[in-house]
Length: 422
Image (cartoon, rainbow, N blue to C red; front, side, top):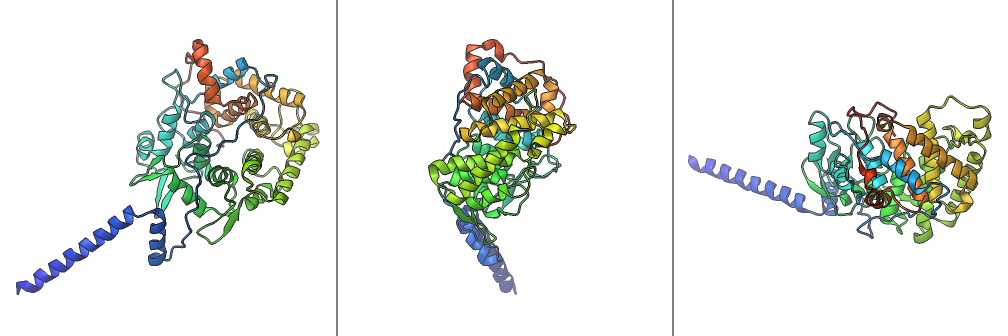
């Protein structure tokens, strides 16, 4: 009578061993092998891993060193204002992302209250750091997927605000392809986030600005890849998507699209990722932007948020909030800093615009900057680019030569004020 029971227990033991072996095999398998298995078992569409020809992303270097646009002293004053002094509780990923893409991984500050580049990276890539800031009452930022890592994004609390913004900012900051990414249950890599983003991309998304940048900086000179939905995507298609519709469309009054387009053009210079026809369309598009902003700059130097209306924006001014003027002016200066001179407005207009953002930034209190940090971070990056440098490179040299500048300002302990997220 005992034999059947023993046989049954042995059978269950064998089944358990088999299941455990399958689970262990899946966990240790490559991303591509896991995708094949999921496709065979669950019908999940398979997309081949996209070749990534580099360990660290490409960098779009600035083209100009113009002290008439911004002096060393004014650049230092602005960068002092936008150092990442953030409250560690309920720390917004969007703020950290903006700070990191501005300051890069190399950033080190004399003030210990300022987050270094490494600390910002750890917050974004390590669930433990995120958990220490937000607790376990909201979903994690890093989302485990069957064959990769997705980033929780949108308007929800504690999320990255924009699709692929997390990836683009870490990419601009110079993260390594094999940098560990600690999700709630796995140790993954940046490569797993990149491949998931490439597989999951949809051309009809509302925002493709950051996808275009991140993908280009990692996979150029490859021009195309296939998503899990069976769609072949090219940088030509991405460029066309960025130029579609009225110029007011897109994040930050349409200005992010302009920066992304210029990144694609600069990548095309060295890696030929665009067709000749698409590149010509981009240059024509940017020439039309140049014409619009050349006739709508206000006397004090700022551009309005409705810059896409051209001269009408100047003759029929809207009641523009200051932060929207900061967005438009800072972002236009930023894309022009990496653009060929043929796409620039006049030098006098560039100098006026830079003068306005310098004055405006210096006039802000610490709490003002804290509440609008994402917008002012672009101002700091744009001005550094016009001096053919990057904020971390300039600031670390400056604080060594001017140690008094490293003294912490009177910073409010209050959390950043609610503001329209960017």
